[in-house]
Image (cartoon, one colour):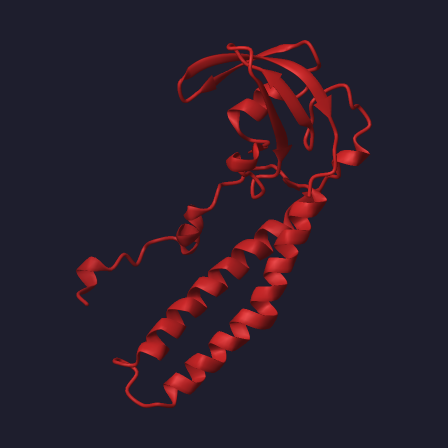
Length: 184
């Protein structure tokens, strides 16, 4: 390939930009369940998947011409993906600060790990849990502590109205309940 089309000055961590960025100078807050899931994924990648792919690549390399060897080419690509994920998980776990919602002393206000019931403008109740950056799951109403809604909710109490900028514009919600429940 012509070097004119290869970007050699790209930073090494550029490939990791697919993942949510952690705000500079902050800890990587996680619930115990989220931390355990990340540790389990890392262990599986290191102990199971990577050794299997290394064996396949080694076997494929011994078959001769590597330029047309699909097992070798795919195996090397998969190995890069696994190594990338291992680096990402290792960095996130290294900076992790595990916060158990059940240990929260001030259960009157909204902090990390809280499950909050909100009343929107139409009178509909919505329940959100504030979790770590890597645990956010909108389908299960789990929002990251760095999201605009979570930032607006932090330190609020039952009866407070919070305003935040949503993609559809400025919204106002009322805090109806604050609970600290175990999150799976």
